[in-house]
Image 1 (cartoon, rainbow, N blue to C red):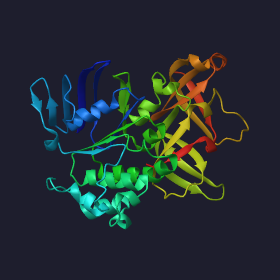
Image 2: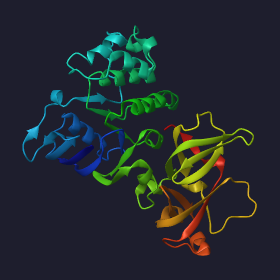
Image 3: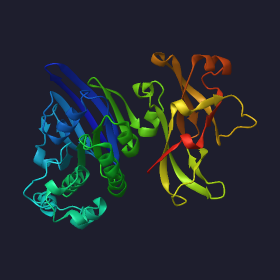
Image 4: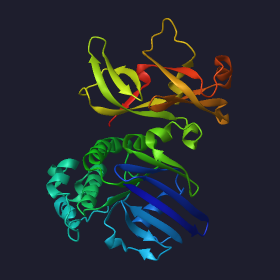
Length: 359
């Protein structure tokens, strides 16, 4: 099952020309700088913008195909929309706002009580929007969109208007939502934290064009993409909690065909999570040192070496059995270690440098 988009549109000052196909289940993040064209995709998918050329298909259902003249009006597309501002009705209670999304909805599997529980808003039902925090309002807006029984949820920078504290408040609820529903979601952001915590797939967009698309872990570790040129470039791996060593205050994670030790986690054995390893924190070696404080010495293969001229550095893409890491080093390090494509390399990583995220 997949979600595919092909879109071309001419604005007075820019041309948008994009195409991608990703698995439909889970969250696909449209990532890139402001003005890149991310919201154009959202508007076209919702039927609120009719591009010059467009074909949008979700799980075999064609929503738009300008070549054949197929164009479903917005009310027939079964899309749920969540914008930066919650756009709740101020004169209605939270409960009435939520039920508004159900008025014209077709029968579906998403139920009122389930949404209230999933988003943790039971205590808010009798309140008016003006009494809610920004994060609470956005949770209610998401609930209203879900109760419209969408086959595609469209979220256009839903956290952009929130401060960091409110973002931290709502991100766990969004993670819970995507895990519980597995509803196709197109999510627009230029915030790396939202990307790494929420995305299953990623579409990288710059200046109206798709630079790359695919599974998040694969895209994050591409040394040849613009994402790798950011100061906060990092590898991302899916993993499971394998073991807790309370005596050593460490947790063992299995990820990418490798084992990682991190500071002791409060998580059940077998629980899924993600780990994010900044490229600037990875040290490369050809052989393991005899005595060293760090716990993680990961064997891999050099898959790609790309220049990072702005920092007078080089990005090294390190392939693991199932996944990849990034390391930012100096050109001199490449020469001294005699690293070459396809050659072996060790990645040395401190346990405290590994950021553990939700699943």
